[in-house]
Length: 289
Image (spheres, rainbow, N blue to C red):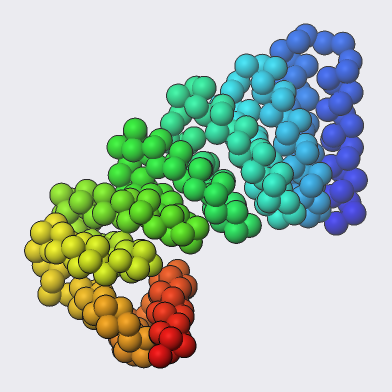
């Protein structure tokens, strides 16, 4: 480990010497770049991630001096991959640099990919507002490149985080839009009932039973097979128990569905909000009687 560290430091010093010494402008930065690349590899072998990240940034700057933006962007991505092990924020800064460079040289697909990655890093930090920003950017970029599946994955993330932030109308609108698009695609049709279930759960969170009933009618028009699914029955039963202000039936309906089709953490969190609101309503009415 110590040996790798010493070799890395030696290569980094040689690179600095190249840059600060005499020599032809181009070859000076090319030679330094090669040495920085070797230094970074030795630091990675020594598991000195911060040092490796910092050297990759120096390598990126050498590429910028040589006007090689694609290579500079790739070096910033390498720096981010090192920083991911020690500092999410440093990784985000480096990926942001890479995104801007890929946009400048028209590599929209690459820019989209790393916007998505920044969104995931913010998601890991539970910073849903920032995560939404980057997943929205990624979705737009993927869409412009006709990469529909990746665009929809990013949009679903936006909708999920919007719901977590209680922005239910925004979440519903996005889920419904994805479901509509997916109905026109034979490969994506199978996923529509799951997307409509997500939209329906967001509608439940809004607490307007009339709106939920209207939505279910709309979803049947959108996908004629939906009314025959367990997802449809689940939403209809939940809406009915909300209409009757029956928290116990609401809870039992969730348990029954979950025993057949496991509900993920996101759905469970939202349904718990609805259940708690129902219980609060019941208790309020008990206090009045």
